[in-house]
Amino acid sequence: MLITGNGRSIPYISQEQLEELQKKYQNGTPIDCEALKTKAQDSVEIKGITQFTMQAIPSENYNDINKQVTGLPASVFSDQFGYDMQKSIYNCMTDYYSGKISQSDVEDYFEECCTSMRIYRTQMRQTTGTDEEDNQQIVAQMYEMFAKKNAIAAQNANYNEGLAINATYGGRSDDFVYYNSDYYYKCEETKELLQKAAHNMTDKWEIPEIDTEEIEKNSIYTIDGGFDYNSMWNINYRNQVGRASMEDESLVPPENFKFFYKQNSFDGILSVSWNDCQEYINIPFSISKTGSLKGQIFNVNDLLSDNFKTEDNYKNYSRFLSSLTVFTRQYSFISGINNQFGDYIPSYN
Image 1 (spheres, helix red, strand yellow):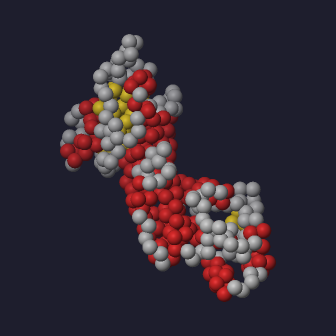
Image 2 (image 1 turned 135 degrees about the horizontal axis):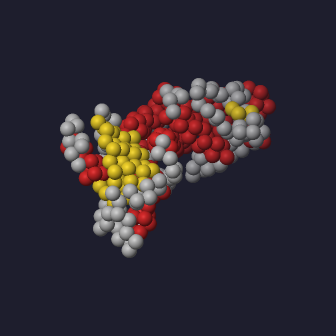
Image 3 (image 1 turned 30 degrees about the horizontal axis):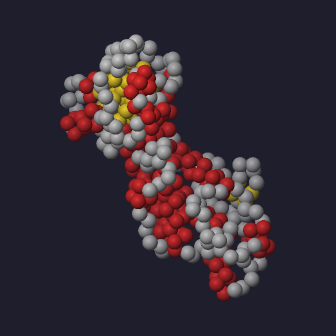
């Protein structure tokens, strides 16, 4: 039985019971709603996923089960049931990035959510459960939600790791920047995993495949970044923290690459590691009282100078390093870079 945030249990029918229900619709057999409620079975719980919250289905929906199908809402996540499922999906992705669950658990949970959503919408008489377009919409919007929560969870995992490093320096907790390329690669890998899960779902339901690229391109969930790690990183550290920026969000970082930057009162510190090489650099900011921006922004590649040129494939990644800039909070406000979104080349003057 699914459990809500207030501890109430939710009536839940299985996929087999849904198919039985659909057959009765087709041949005109009256529905015994009380028997249906009695037959409601427990849902499958994916091991390790914390708190699956769902809204209880009102009993009158069973009594009105024979009413005309009204059609799916524009978003299957637009009511309390959908809101609660969004939270559970985020919990799933957070647990995945913290190592509590596996890739197969995420795939299983994707299918579980698709199935639960179709059953719920059928119980609400918003679909027959067999309509091809409705089923496509459910899988498409489920992919969209999982993929977005994947990007958010990846960036949050990166931020929390940076926060722990920042704590060792003391002082403010909102003046640092951190980038760990491990989370970039895991985010991309997980998005491919979700695309596979969506493909498996359309195969199982025997409906046409969804176009995940078009879904991401036309998504409404892009005001805080896209479905990729780099755009989410820019939103966090360029637009919110206001101390670093990436010129080209499409660039691929070196593997095993990390950098940490923290602004102090009159200077900054930069810690960069790549494989077994690590460098600590003092950034000599020049903060002008006249409002000049010169000396308040530095290119990361310029700061590294020759430090990493002995690394394999350095030339392949020099463009990525040159795309990264660090600057002062004052530069952020005066230049307006914190109000720029997407790819953007800042001014150094």
